[in-house]
Length: 233
Image (cartoon, rainbow, N blue to C red; front, side, top):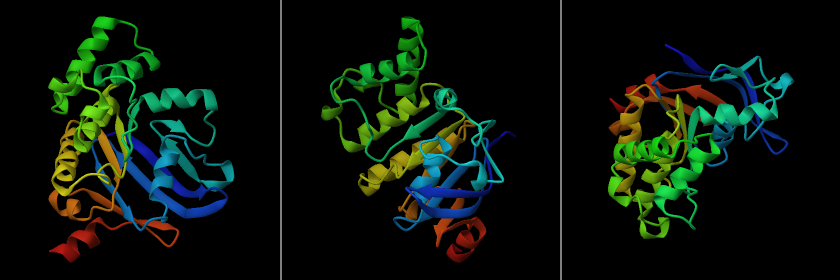
């Protein structure tokens, strides 16, 4: 089984402040991982280091590897290739509102090096089918509900067959039923071998769709899967 993320003794900064220190964090192929904690506890900042939105400096980690790359020595020009191997999902969807669903997905494929129009169209079909949105191909984002927009955002994340999906509060703007459907979809994706790492405040989901649980608290992160499941039983 491939180790997709391997952090040892990592420090995570937000602006100039340390939000997390001594981070030991690991993601293996197909794992379904929740990161929980209060607002400001470092959840989003940790996720941002995975796709190099926040840097990890040489003095701030014993080891920081993501998808086989050493983040400490990774050069700026190598970041797009790293991001192409992961799917990133945001709470606010971040769809382009001046174009329909199909053109949103086409834009990403083009930006990530696809050239064959037929292959692009086929891949768009596949990801829309996977998230149950095949009939929304020509819709504008403004014509979709929040849950539908999030499904399109997940379809977009799947376009390049990522090894890992990073989702920052993907259900934060959704009603409970829609949120359940979205987490269920992400869980299904993890069963195909794509790891899912998700920050969330939605604690009931941890019961419905069990996974590995990390908690950010007082500048530290620890795995509490056993403790969490124990307290629930």
